[in-house]
Image 1 (spheres, rainbow, N blue to C red):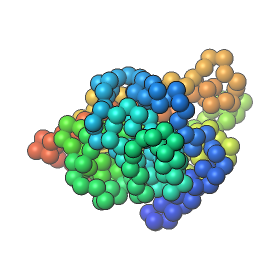
Image 2: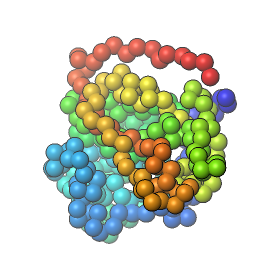
Image 3: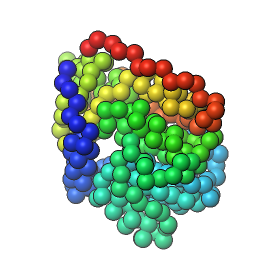
Image 4: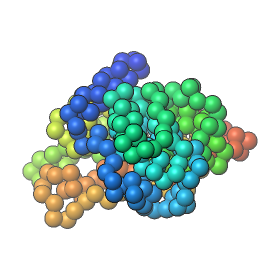
Length: 273
């Protein structure tokens, strides 16, 4: 089990990796299309977690550059701030905003350091898949809790730990667990994967960290879903085929509790590797 590099090295590496993915026009760096902005909330909130109307709401799209999340929420009437560690990803948001006549603010920062913002500055935090790029998810949750108003909603999506443990391709028709659950340090790098981003350092977060960490940071979990990407007739070895056996993502709706109602945080349980 390898040790984690220092935090600044992780940030610099992942910033550079995402800048390169933008230059390559990777699928996750393609801006929102016209239809997505027209349908806005139906596109990003199909379950109705946000109540069908975010007009005038102060929205933080966290680690969400790339010209998609921010413009869609701005199209829905939100007062949007986009935070991302990659300047190239943020430039895509500014580009889309100019083209569509939208107003949004962009801030270059790491998702675990939101010190540029005031406490309770946002009513809603939208956080697409990205917590895997930092080793300490608790620091991210604490940062979000501070900038979110009491009663505010935090919608986050994560790569499931089982997906990060599991082989990218089947061996003799079977996907296998390759990584230990109680591991530290970045995961081995991959190339040509629909599930992992080339050049990034990624980290596995256990369910106890993903869910328990949210509760200890002052959130109440109101809903949890595993978006379905499986297709029964998918080609063996494809993203949709692997998703038949392993849920790639989990999406969580949580609400910020008032500070006076928070339960005392308990220490993390150490387990042998």
